[in-house]
Amino acid sequence: MHAPESPPADKSPPPKPRRLLDLVRERIRFKHYSLRTEETYTHWIKRFIYFHAKRHPRELGAAEVTAFLNHLVQTRDVAAATQNQALSALLFLYREVLAEPLAWLDGLERSKRPVRVPTVLSQAEVTALLAGMTGTKWLMAALLYGAGLRLRECLTLRVQDVDFDYRQIVVRQGKGAKDRRTLLPGHGRGAAAGAPGAREGAARAGPVGRLWRSGASERVGDQISECRAPMGLAIRVPVA
Image (cartoon, rainbow, N blue to C red; front, side, top):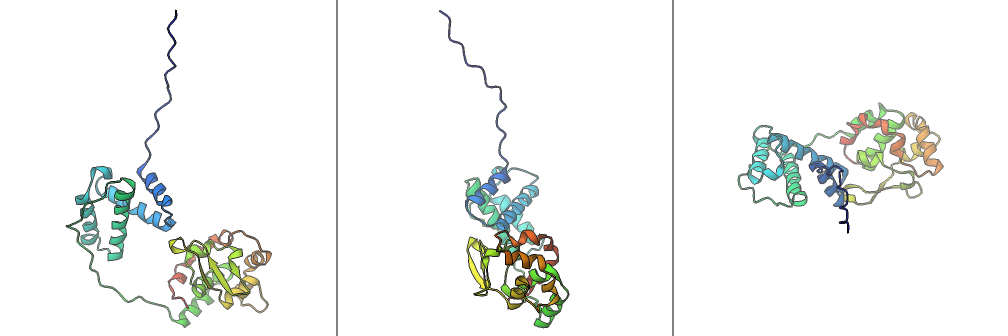
């Protein structure tokens, strides 16, 4: 009687270990954090790893975290908010990803840079800034200022979220993954709808106006994504 043949050996290569930052991103998305939070956390985790000569965080602990955060204050002279960002990223890494909560950071030196009064543009300066723009760049800047939209919220704005009858905009998945309503400024309303007598910037916003009037459900940001770069000044002005 013949002995049963043994199954052939599995010659497939073993699965590659998953990268740490991939695990971080997966956990952040599981927790429904924003994309900006994901970018910030991965940035600080990478800086922490490079600071300690690319050692794996499992080999490090509270002492190394404290040394990195103190380096940010003593050498880089970062603001308290920046240090808190780095601290939150590392606490998330050890608590949520590595499941190794850190002990209390007794030797942590907190940043004590004085709080500065922000520099804000006056209404005349804002008017002059918007007057130097035309077309979709002007339309985006006007919405950022008049409706108080963040840049990412403006780029992902959908046509169906703009209500001309109630003169309001519904912001989907804003900060904290929450929806909110904000006003639709009069100049933005005329520009988007292509109303007669609108200013030159509105008249040049024909493609966006046609998109709004068509009732399409695509994102406005897909049509005007090339306008990301020039928005740096506009998003710093206060909300009217």
